[in-house]
Image (cartoon, rainbow, N blue to C red; front, side, top):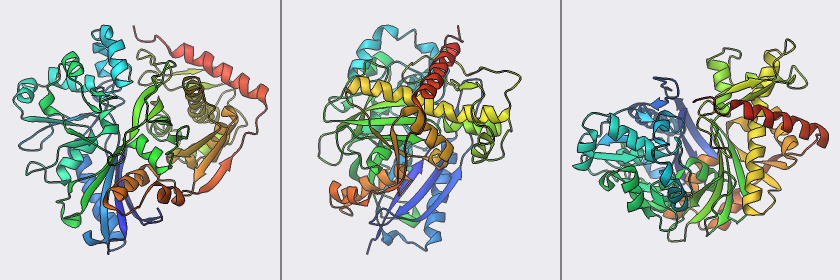
Length: 497
């Protein structure tokens, strides 16, 4: 009997395979990091072949942990870093270049060129012109890899975000692999029309991208094919969701007005807006939240912050001020406040709600009094300040108070950050019992498609609260800190001419 659902969680810095039982409990998991490649300032790349190898390795390791076999699985799902762009040869499966990561800013050169089309693009896709999305990344590869445009026009090249690349490889690759993506990942390419959930011919013409390289768009919960990889041979691939939408599903935010915030490499707050897309007037993204089987798609407002957990990694790897990411809380707790120091991590420009591609990171408020502990505290507080900016924009767009935020992601283990988040938001923060909600969302989608889970009520019954954080800060302190943060943000803008 098949007692488990598996989820591949392919993130910006690592890949995991997590096995869940019917209660949503984790029974096995494995994780491996992959290389972050920085060829030039502002460029961020991944080796798609390395990601594929890591995927196979973590599947094998997690299954070996509990001596699991293919017959133990009812199905598997995929959740993935979104927007990251892979182009590969249809016949050999070889990537034509390193994947261009969502954080990469090399396509900034195109923004002025397409400025006249921005209103039309935003109306159709819910997304502003930005270096963030896949459209301009595809265009850059077609323009800059020798011979690639002609190969793409002749049908020899395939495009996908990482979900598509993994699904194609898992289901056979060059020998009959399934070339698909789901509506959530499709909505992040800036080539999908939100209302039709189909590739848009006018957008393809605008960005000069050939339709034949694009995958088939599918619901987030559907049997797409079967895995050909040996230890999972014959297991249905039945769920695909972009990572932030997967976390929304994993947090069971199925009702209009429910919101979650994921603290990972970046920080992403999504608010379920129901069956109609809400176009933002306050710097947020409109995106597809999920589509389960034949049900209509659900939409979300999203606030995307590029650098949160990545800033902690930068403190570790680039400055060497901490030995591990977990050390930042210990260091920050050695002082009572930020000492007047504010860190605006606009390494890839400012995302929501500003969308300033020409911004760059700044540290403001330095005096002789400041030390590395104050800097550590400023690093953590930057995540909470950026989240408040997004929540405020979300409330303005939706006309609804976000009174509780469900949280997940690696940074929720940082108690200092979570308490400061509750303080600066003046809202309750709620952590679920199962913290790996991104992988859980992919497992839920796959489980619904194969009948492992009955319905949304059964999924809701698996969700329970592990911990709450309630505001403790007085309003005067809160608003003074936030005012200084807003001042620091202005110093990061217009850095690049």
